[in-house]
View (spheres, helix red, strand yellow):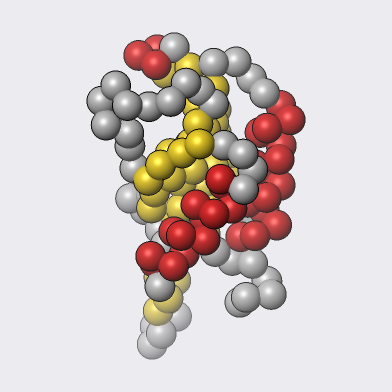
Amino acid sequence: MIAESMARLYKLLTGLGIKGTHQAYPKGGAPAPPFFVYDLDAGGEVFADGSNWCETPRYRVQLLERQMDADLEQRLSNALRDEYGPVLVMEDWVESEHSRIVSYYFTDTHPERG
């Protein structure tokens, strides 16, 4: 199930016209920004009621850009929300890459898929 979910996510992201990879590019192998890296976040969501529990993986997509591209960021955010549900967005600067990084965190909670 996770492999299928990751393949679905990759297809969604590349469908936006962005290059990317799972986890990381080999050292020196990354394309020029913008590009994305995606993986399962170390966390996740766990719910329990005393007799039942549910664990939902949390995904992370990181968009690296040399400068802000509001249109690209909005298209990415909208695509993730439409496909998965609520998305937490965080921005930062990565000095070693001389790039800004926009991180999107989400679980697969789309109401039509339960």
